[in-house]
Length: 193
Image (cartoon, rainbow, N blue to C red; front, side):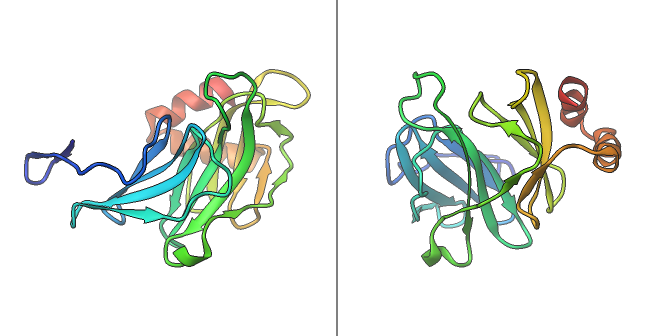
């Protein structure tokens, strides 16, 4: 079901084109659409257009994964998937450190695996990580362990540079400023940074 706030209606959505379990879902405000990505042992992706009321198949990801984090860069119209779980969802230690992207204006190119530099030395295979976009160029990653110890940590993915960096003083100040307007970011700041 989809609840349409503007018209105060509850509408039944048609069934998705492919089965998904433990998938990732994100509302793309810019496109007025809902994207569904992957799932347990699934690379399938699709998008639901709220205007037409129809599902449209998207290219499959390169690697089937569940519980990946999604981010839409509204300026470049690129969807990013961060990390996730491969294989059987009930197995332990099956987290991956893969970032993929899909250009929504060039769907024929399909998903690309991003070759990024992990300067923060975060071990994304050690456990589940979450993301929180800070800007169109920076995404906060938190929850994974540092490779040198098992403490939960946070880092920042710099989209233009394709690198994950430690939170230096400049980034920390920027995050602190943004946390004044976001309860969620404020909690993350206290817990991970």
